[in-house]
Image 1 (cartoon, protein in one colour):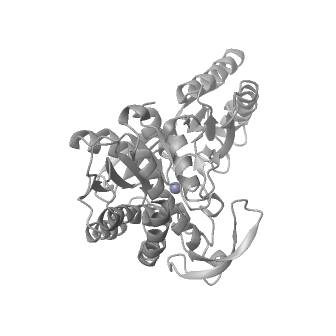
Image 2: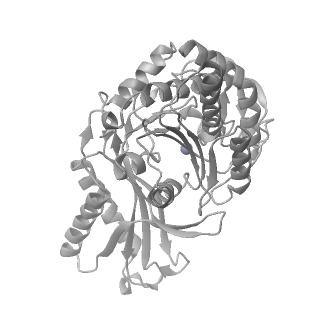
Length: 434
Ligand SMILES: [Zn+2]
């Protein structure tokens, strides 16, 4: 069966690649995914998926119903991408051209490179290449059934969501908490299609944006002693906070250590001759499975309380940063920017069978852990659905100029996704429980 999967993947490549180019040629920044969603739904219908719909927030879902009962497996991707950045850095390539070129491109170890054919364009590595691969994984399973008598267990569920890049998991949260819940769609395992260079990703640290506001008292710049300079107070806070964060950091043997990075700082009113009375600081915080966003805020509050006890002029607050996003369907959604750490045990049947599937194809079946965050905490942590990462895209090209996807790896990931489906859907729902 795995030989046949490989043959079908190379046959379907000739349809998958032009479809992927079309996705890249259709810009779809967060809140503007409408055109790509329509193209995606049209393709799912053309390929005869049993159910195709989009929800209130614009997430797209395609389902292929199995022939026999078995676990329902979701393949999750996102439709949005980051802005293309400076045009000159793309050299002769249009960021939305989606052309195929031969370029010196990284192998699994990014230090090693080789000339290979790639699609170039914003969003192709993060993650339109995966969207195309997931769409054609369904097509491959249907061909396997039609031509080779494959009895498909469970359901193949494709989901491609809006608003992932902002980091709050908005699209996947709405998909799982509301759309699937209201429609009674059950999922027993999930494959997250963020870049893994064809390996299997088993987790990442949690992430949150920690926002500090330091309060002062405005005064004329000629007489600063009459005010309290919020920036000077912020300097004390930064020092004390980073000392505490460093001293209290935890380490997970697989995911790494608690992290903190000061990313944005600004003051108000920020004008000549005025002692600022507000200083805003934003930290990117990463944390291990034994920590939570609540712990991060509590630690920041302890530092604030200590400084306030020592200095009557010190006043500050800390919270998880909140944003408001508008979907292309016109919904305004306020959301806190955090995601939990997630980790799938190496011995969990989802990890074991996914690795067996890749081995059966003769592919790399190495486990590894992402540096960045994904939407996997929604399924794995909040909904207790075991989740694994797998994709033929490369982390090293995400959010960069000359973003690209290797044609050979897109084909391999198509076979890999289908093989994972075969192996994992052969399990019982019970086996997959976390
Ligand atoms: Zn992504």
